[in-house]
Image 1 (cartoon, each protein chain N blue to C red):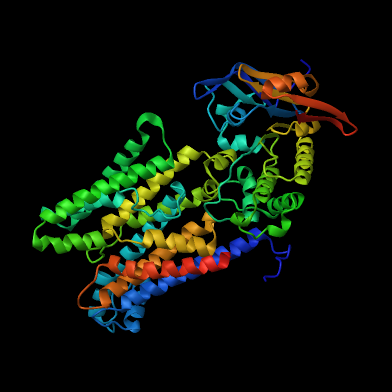
Image 2: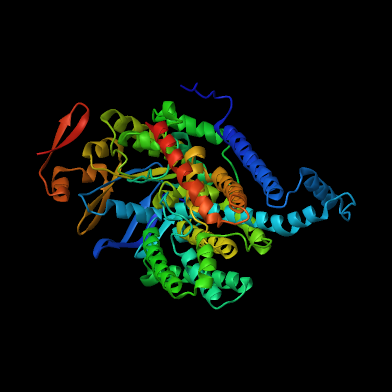
Length: 259
Length: 350
């Protein structure tokens, strides 16, 4: 062990079950500073459930999740949210709110109970909206945004939250090719700037190849952990998705296509 | 087209200005309605009498010789307690409605949707049927409301699974149950009691006395709701999103449920089940002010207070000397105003 400080996010004997299915049993995971992790798995493999458990949005059946060595349940929700940010798959527009208001909500864990957002909070929000190319929509109501724009707004809210540990549930959802790449690049830059770590579930193997250095493959028998080089092989991926997959070497790096 | 906001005046600065403007305006409206309520009625009171009364009260002097004692008595003994009650009840109902809408994640929820008023009504009607006095009617209404609070809470928590939609269903069905009991009581009630029972059900302030502890409770609720305001903003984006941003969702939901229920219980104890106010006021303000609860909650309370007082002043003067139950007026005003605002906001969206 070369790490003197505890890992940013780790688990201890973690067991997660959903609807009678065991996702992982007595499982240990450690995410360290600077690491970018991906979770791959088929539909219903439990990517979201696992992410929610790691973020404390859902209770584990057994074992612990630790944030920088401190068990999650010993932290107040607000303290947790100061360190750990989560990108949800779904969002709600039942009540009206503007784009700027929504982005500013990312400051919530950093503000006292009666405080209003300060000028610097607002600058953070404007800056994030600019980076996701939504700064022209500040006063627009969120129910007037397209699916991709809403996804970008959620990412901006997360950037405004400035966590150290970033958990993203399918960040590439609804995004066009340009935004998939440019927003993931932006997010990775933020992770680096915060000296943090990132864990995201992905469906696109090529995004995983391009952005991740470590992977979790969710097999029915349990999760498999390893580096990208170990796990992104035709054989393993075919086993994971139950579908033939080809790896092609191109000048832009390896590319995966379903055969 | 609006000009793009300049970067110089910041958004939160603008928000604070807007809040000051709206809350100041609504507070002024409350004050004017109070003056109006004190001055209008079957016994005429002049502005001078009111001025004299204020001066006497402020200087703590005994009524000066020039003052009109009848006018003073009418204002302090009859109109002021009723007007203050109207302000408190209006604020409580509107605030409870606003909280209930966030708790149930439904912009169409009102304070009565979970059966608080039904429970209170059964208690109140029982007292009226037993020929008990006003104190007992209020008391048993409060007991009925609290019974409903515990019943719905317990039932929606049975088997440990809990969600706002489960709470809503449990509440709606319990309310329907109370409705059946109310119908039964009305059908066996004696003719001379029916009028009192119906007035209670429609919401009526004619029996109201000084708000007393209800007013104190309203003030405490306003402070609590100021603490809850930003977490409530997060809740609008969904439970999980609120959790992800560091809101302790379950304790917040319980607080919301208790606060909204007790506010409603306090309101119906004073005035019976005044309709529409708790649905219409928060909704109208949401459409015109947006949904930042730091502004919305106090604005809703002030607007509810002002509207109920105006409605009650109308109720006792419209066909004087006969008095109408204020619930009739709130419905008459509330429905068209609500539809108008809805139409207007639809135009704004497209």
